[in-house]
Length: 228
Image 1: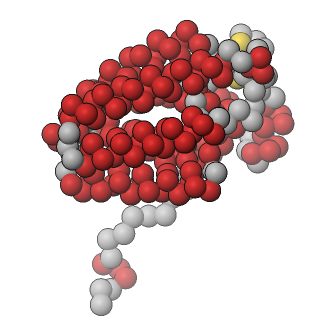
Image 2 (image 1 turned 60 degrees about the vertical axis):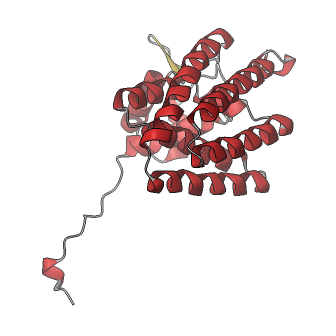
Image 3 (image 1 turned 180 degrees about the vertical axis):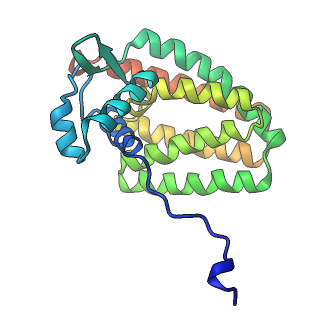
């Protein structure tokens, strides 16, 4: 048995408060619990999160860089509105990037990488079965990011992450109807099967179609009277 003094273990660290604030505020915005156009009341948020204004303001700046928050000169910040035209343009680019990532992943991802994605898929499937949309979305995002990461192209991964952050709220909105959510799950089943088979041509087509269907769903939500 090794002596405690010789053990090589990482130190226990606490996440910076602004990172915790970013995660919590992002979740509230993405899930629509703070509606677009709502002014972010710093005093109330500080009380609810149990933090001071310094980490909260840092979190707001980071979310503004992601496109989820709009900073108003001398007037604080509001939750950014989801603009259909901007979402359409962004998802069109992301569809091309994901198709390329799928092709490269079929070639470059290791069996261990595919195992990670498969495990995330089963977790996502369980969330879908429970009707837990927030949990489903968490694993859904992880799958898409892992797929692009394991393409082996660092530039592609960095660009995709930046674009994905700017439409995170729109992607969450895509599965607000039960019909579309069920369809999305079936599409992911097909995506996983194509990836497991390393069928790059089929995977490219499936990923492209998946984002096309997602865009149609988002536009439908944004054009509904309730979103007006």
